[in-house]
Amino acid sequence: MQLQYISEKLFIKPPHDRTMRIARLAAAASMMLVTLGSTAGAQRNSLPDAKIRWDRLCQMRKEKFDHILPEAMRENGIDMWIVAQKEGHDDPLAPLLGGGYTGSVGYFIFTDTGGKRIERAALGIEDHHREMCGAYDIADGNASDLLTFVQTRNPKRIGINMSAEMGMADGLSHMVREQMVRTLGPQLSSRLVSAEKLVSDFSSRRTASEIVAFGEAGEMGRQIAERALSNEVITPGVTTLADVAWWIEQQQYERHLGSSFGVPSVYITGPNGIEATSTDRIIQRGDLIMLDFGVGYLTMWTDQKRIAYVLKPGETTLPASFQKAFDNAVRVRDVIHRTARPGKTAQAMMDVINAAITKEGILPMRGFNQVRADSSIEFIIGCHSVGDWGHGIGPSMAFFNPGRLTYEMRPSNLFSIELFAYTPIPEWGGKKLRIPLEDDGMVSARGVEWVYPVNPRIILVK
Image (tube, rainbow, N blue to C red; front, side, top):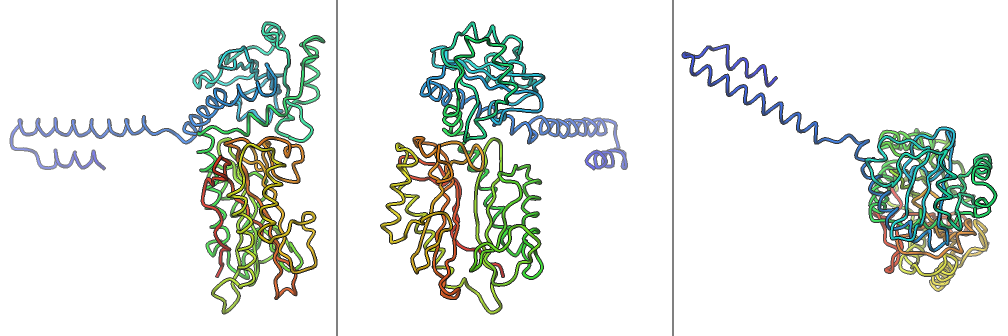
């Protein structure tokens, strides 16, 4: 359109003299060059989303290797860490370490040579961009050189990814381990030890760039969740739980986000507990809807919950008993928020938190969903590690992560502050409504610091 306009201005009405026409031609050429130059410049300066994400992952990886890896290896007494994988069976940590294509077998190898910097090598794992990132000292080594590589460095303890509890620290397959043992021979193979705790420490201690990415993931998840439980998506008497779940999955698909747990859990809670989850059950007026899900962005994964109530005809506000139940859950969350600190094991910190909540007059549950047949308000917490997956592999103040209860909480650990509060509902004959709250934050010396706005209310669906 711009060129057509210039052409019309120049030639539809010929100028009276040749000088004027030449001047106009020169001006037109100049305008065309400016326009084309600006377009080309914009194209050069506009990075595709894939490149932006790659740049961010590269930065995160370099900072992780520089600042977290040395302390994780030295605290665990491991002077060489080998992450082995083969084609079609990448280690769960591969995205964090940089990924790439593995043929028959490949290794990420990290060696503590005594300096400030851990040596990083990739053998047999191809990535055309790895050298550009600069996170690795040896970016494209040969897997067949494994024995010579290890012999030259002569490590005393070699960590490998084997774990009884944590899937992300258990990526070494049986056959790859056997192949590694044969390659290294009996002397070096006798030095192989589990890298379980090293993997947990390396992954769960966070750099600033990771926390920024985690906050972005949490905010995207929050927006999706709160839109999902609103009239934008829900029409009472028409919309099913499955409809809501599919809408959420579509949002994740369109935003190129992963899913922490697969199909989102969209469920109805009533006097007898959970009635249906992500099924064709139609949402009705008077329903209490719970949502539990998580999103993945870069190498960060969230775990979040939201709650909605579908107003009955004539209602304009939440029933008072439901509001009281929500307020009791917020009381529990407030205690966790101001009490949780690094410096203790997760078990010791959980004991402190449970005692502080009990002082508020709320009783600890005897076991998950084991409700007392009385008028007491009860609670149970499951504040687990998050970030490296929806259920992470760091210190965990949760009964369902027994091994990680023994891990010390450190500054920058990310936690999903998950809790359940049970309050008697008079109109349910005293049966208790379970209110689940769950949002993500970082622990610091100041307590829990949220990385996005936490759940302030039960959403009302009209």
